[in-house]
Length: 318
Image 1 (cartoon, rainbow, N blue to C red):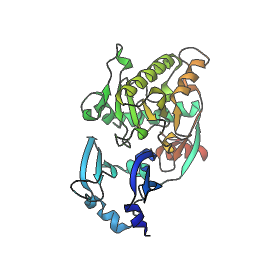
Image 2 (tube, rainbow, N blue to C red):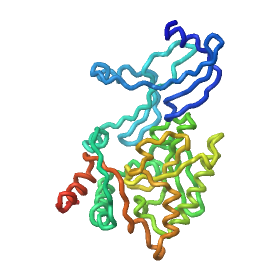
Image 3 (cartoon, rainbow, N blue to C red):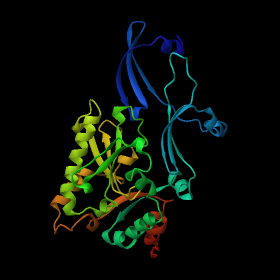
Image 4 (tube, one colour):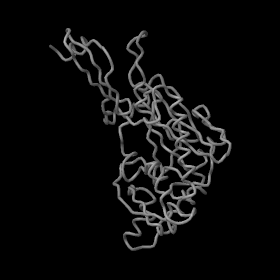
């Protein structure tokens, strides 16, 4: 019996599981009355240059999910519809950066990684000025556009209105979430206050604020999505983050961990405010006083401008 014959005779009974952010499904059913399992996942992209050069023209039914400055997000089909009665669901989630810069190209190119340790001295002398340089170059304009209500408001899922404005936050879908698969739920909680650039700015006095913020966000997300309870959510932040404005990643516990949740990138929010609460010193003691280790790409500025010179015994120039 041919493989195609078996597949076409598969009779669906129920969905058993969905993982890898919705890219893999496991179906229970029967073939000729006998029980069968069908595991389907999206195949790898064809890297033949002929296919890649035509990729943009092959996409159909492109749906615009949003845009902000040079960033745009879409859903699309790489295959035509099977029929008018059974349209093919989108199988591509597309992010477009246009016009992009050399820094974008370096960020998304394959590169070797290094594991580095940032001491309080390295942070204050080199990394903090590096962060400030990026902010002064306008790299956060797109974030402030969202906070100020100037762009991407159709993507804001929730905007809080707390009694104290410094407690306010926005909820947005992460760019890699399809906004449908609950097991792949991935949101960003973007705080409106601008005095916290990264985890390094968190101090002992912020522990209560962080703990309350986590609780409020958990309750809000749980109320927004049926079947998602507060203990089905994980909270973490990145260090180094992609951009230097404090934001929290909120994901479903069933979301398969990738490099973005790995050691060397993600820090559990619960661990952070627990560390702050038990830290010695006064209220001004904080995360700027501890060592943090993380991975950096060799093509990135943190490696080329700071850690490579330090490794080679040279003085970094920021």
